[in-house]
Image 1 (cartoon, helix red, strand yellow):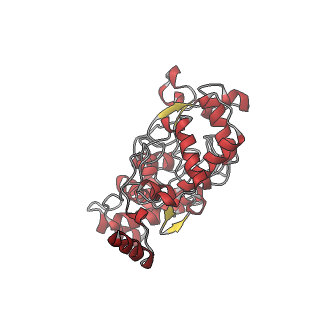
Image 2 (spheres, helix red, strand yellow; image 1 turned 180 degrees about the horizontal axis):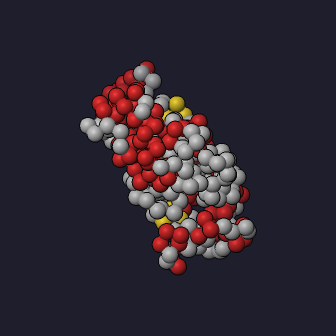
Image 3 (cartoon, helix red, strand yellow; image 1 turned 45 degrees about the horizontal axis):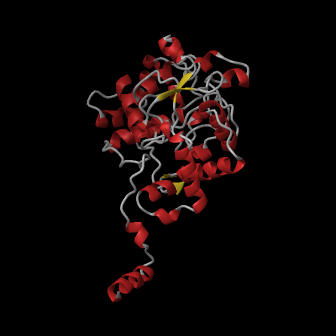
Length: 319
């Protein structure tokens, strides 16, 4: 008893908690993994390219124009604008933790971040450029040419530009959310209401699609399992067909990649069409059209409180 009291006293004296040293919880959701080992020269090149409007045909649009790191890695508008100033067909997904997704884009049309960079640069609605033009612009910049030669033996090529950007994006993980700290054993860090919200999240079945280390991003699902959300929302577009536009398979109509819920509290508006302006509205839509249920007001509040614990940090600061 005396030794136990001494341990508690030392813990108080050092400002530590025994809970902080508890074992990780055995839960279906997992904390973020460590960052992959990457070449810092290539990552630094990727950072510069991410913020460089010369990737777009008219030098007006960079990756950072739509994937705003001060807006949760997404955009606070329903639709970002392409190089021509016209709105894009779908809401911009967050770039944070995108390296943990099993496919990229809402319709999952590419597998890797490198392929995603390629598709965006040549897209007629996004950057509208060609790789021949991009390589010339980058190679004609003496600073870029020198740094690419140091990072890649063959210097400036389409594959190396794509690789550098992808490697930078792989560093954009957002660790240390309060929920991650909870999963790692610090169970005191969540309030009782937040814990109840997580319990409701599991009990109602939200976790069937939003699971794993990215709390989503690892499967496809039909948007509107228990009702036709798109018809009820109105004004359907070709983009609403989702994965059907990629495969032509009728079973893929209105099927989308399940988005990650990490940092979801700071990435409004929601869904592929940005049609839910608030987190509360998004939760209500999910209940009705994915689960076929009407949540109580309290359940919505509790789940939203839990979702707010998923906000992590970037460069040591909360998003």
